[in-house]
Length: 116
Length: 113
Picture (cartoon, rainbow over the protein chains, first blue to last red):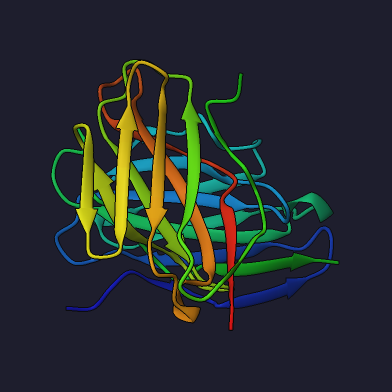
């Protein structure tokens, strides 16, 4: 069974540019999560989709970040315009079920974003 | 108090040693807990789940102390391949009743030959 995949694996852009990250969850997983790890800090929650709906986006840093999950399959996370502090590793995770309780989240390999 | 707190380490231990990490959490309502392992430049992967007082899997033992609100991970007979960062993950519920997890900063373990 294919795991969670993310594209690209690395992205280097200049401040002010736009970048779009993609996540393909495990097939059949309704829950899709985006996380970010800034260097030296803990992994932080950004948002949670249940199918195509944003269930919780309380972790989104500001309105420069836009996440979508069209059709409840893959998801994109767009950063526009990118700032230096957006650099970090962006992880996507997916899980089965309604998202309640302690369902295991399966993580993608992450996208390493560097903003120069 | 931080939601999830871990000693960042690094813990440098010789092969064969026993090492233990602690993780404290602030949400007394949390029911389940996870230890994830993250290798350098890789994604986190589930190592163990803890739903009651503890869980044991081979050389790994996770224990939960609800009264003191901490979980621990014990690794016996350390192997070189155990070198990684160990993340304490505490799920909770958001206002909509869905799972929301909080990560600790991770504890780095380096097993030395």
